[in-house]
Amino acid sequence: MRPQKVLDKEILEGLTKVFRSKGYEGASLKELSEATGLKKASLYHRFPNGKQEMANAVLNHLGNWVEENVFNTLLDENLTPSNRLKNGLFQIKTLYDKGHNSCIFRALSMESGLELFEKQIMQGMNKWIAVFSELGLAFGLQEDIAQKKALQALVEIQGSLVVTKIMRDISIFENTLKNIEQEYLR
Image 1 (cartoon, rainbow, N blue to C red):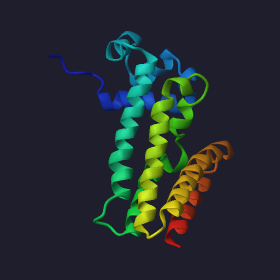
Image 2: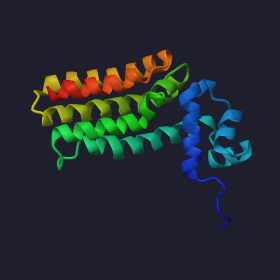
Image 3: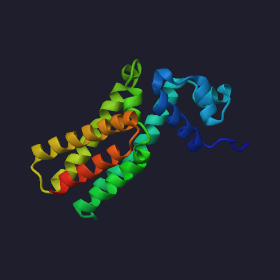
Image 4: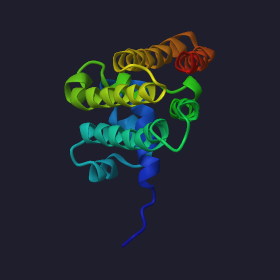
């Protein structure tokens, strides 16, 4: 079997970059092709169901990364809650390239993307809330307070990414992560 010229990881990174910046509707096949280094025919060979399958692959790829790097860190009972939080926030900072990257949930929830990916986006957000709630319980918070704090953390992360992008100031995102850390460490 002939070796692949373009590795799956590179393809997913290229697709992710385009979907993050253009959203589902705005991402053209030309841009997706150029970002992956594949011709359109090769892209369709890898993703026979087209752009929707590509976006699903990106959601799965990022979901796996978040599970492995963010959620597993926040839930690691071998670490103190404060170390879990600090390490988890560092991974979130990495995921969003210090605030330079948009969230794929936001990018794919615009226009018809929400209809296509609503279930996955909802599951992903619920998982973020559940994991941060679990962390809050590890800090000794009551369940209802842990839930509220978890939801607030998600809102702050997502909102700061939007504001960071619009204001072109990554300190907004970085300060948000610091504020979340301080809020949990109180």
